[in-house]
Length: 280
Image (cartoon, rainbow, N blue to C red; front, side, top):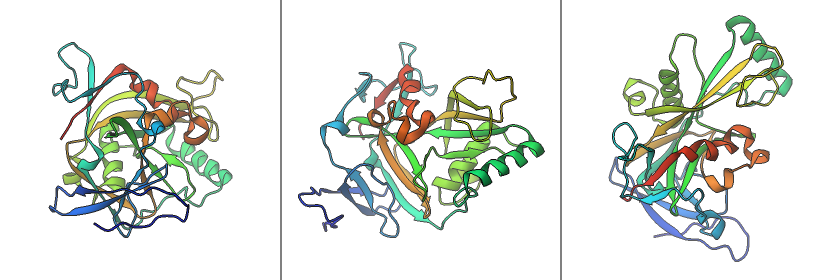
């Protein structure tokens, strides 16, 4: 197995592994690098993982198991607790596809605010749906995030169309950003669970809040977070203008400066679930 040298820092430890592609029975190389790490690196289709230092291995909330407490089809175990089954990162294959156009990629803040205002005047409150997708690495849950060229971290998802439901809209967005194509066959592969949080914006440039604003203004945007449960194996096909990352929950917790209020608050939203690591 070949090792690919990444970076020029001295004493950098590299470790190589293999990840099986469950779809074409091939293998792709994995290389260890510094945090944050990327699950998709076109054109080489490398899956890159972090160094296994103590901060990456930390388990929070004491709610992890080792495959002996699986939820039923409704995500509830025998004790009535909500359960989220997560699978090892090595169970998944990551590749790339042509770039997907993004309206806000080259926009200034003023331009974006003006565009949102025009859309609000024409269509009313903007409704967005985002996916909370978890995988396991080093016995710790990691959240999948997208990073654009302007280094902004986002959950997979986006704005609803006026004629679609929240579930259908989220499946469309996930297929557009994480599947080979956006059609019914790929949309039906996404298992969207319950809504775990709702955030609101009272203006076009304000930060979101987990409650309706008390300013007396009509909210301009509503953002809903949904748990999306992964199967034991899956292809992730990411546009070349986006990077897919897996970030440990312990790194996200209260880290608003880096990830923003919504993403930094996800570990607390997940605290009511029992996270079950399923060994494959």
